[in-house]
Length: 380
Ligand SMILES: *Cc1c(COP(=O)(O)O)cnc(C)c1O
Image (cartoon, rainbow, N blue to C red; front, side, top):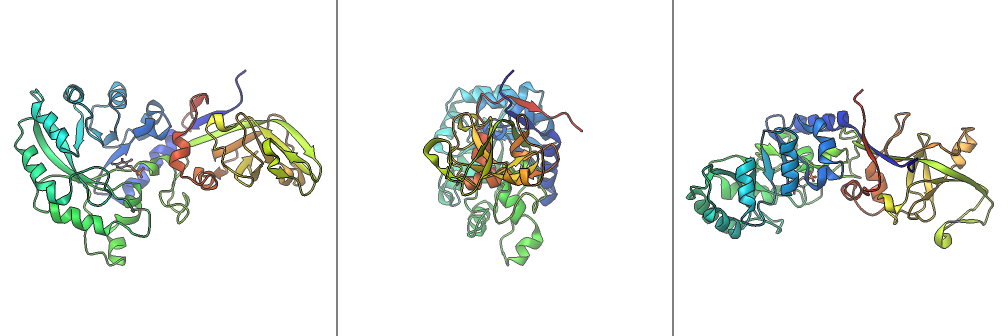
């Protein structure tokens, strides 16, 4: 028998979350962002739940090829464009749309031999200062692209640095609108946070925003995977999102320890009263963060409790005291949910676990370890 650890992907939840993103921007087309192997879910496993998207956005050419292999004939967008000239051949062959964010990519296009002109997304650096042409250089990049026989339609994109937080997106929208105003073509600006927080017109009115956010294509990523883009300001219940990945395991031992006894490496937890401890077959080699301290939430038999002491490579300890006090039978083989949905329907958001690790749901789902078997939940 393998260890009892298991990740379960929920296609119905993926579908629900995509619809939730669409509801925030009903007139826009939606890219399902499936980079990083669909945020750790597995492109092939996530595909069924996301196939009602208008297109798939990602950045690895192998992943683009995998989406085509699944039979997807619609749009695929390479969010970072090509990395070397021969990538353009694959773009031609697989009909991939690609971002153009720097002069080198225009040079490669100009030298590319193709009968089929490419659809490109010209990217503006409107303040994130990672990828894209500065507003001042944007028009000359557009003119160069527009003159190339290798280029068909030109669309426009930019990416927000603070859609989830205080600073917001107004300063970037203003620049983007100003420098694209009279250029013909579709626009794509909104990630998950912008889609949920800034797309509704009444929202903008309420905030006194003067610049309209026009996104012909939204680009939701994290929201599809059941993690709140602005946790803890809003949690997944506030946004009506469902967890799409459950990491579950089982108790493989219990210990009853006395006051003063410690648990695990470094004796990081010392019992202040007699404590019943469960030992779970899950550790940092499964992708559960070692940095999670005592008190990180966990579900045992669908009941919320906490971790105790240091997470080790293959195991972690949980506090069974509340379950025992409630007269619940727990022991070897009892279900443990590290994040996601327990069998009894109780949900522990990946965002809460991430918060205890000082990180985001993004990092945890992407870091699911290769040794964890993954199953796709049968639709119910
Ligand atoms: C990853 C990414 C997104 C999706 O971001 P989320 O915060 O996961 O919604 C959108 N656009 C670009 C360019 C990205 O790289």
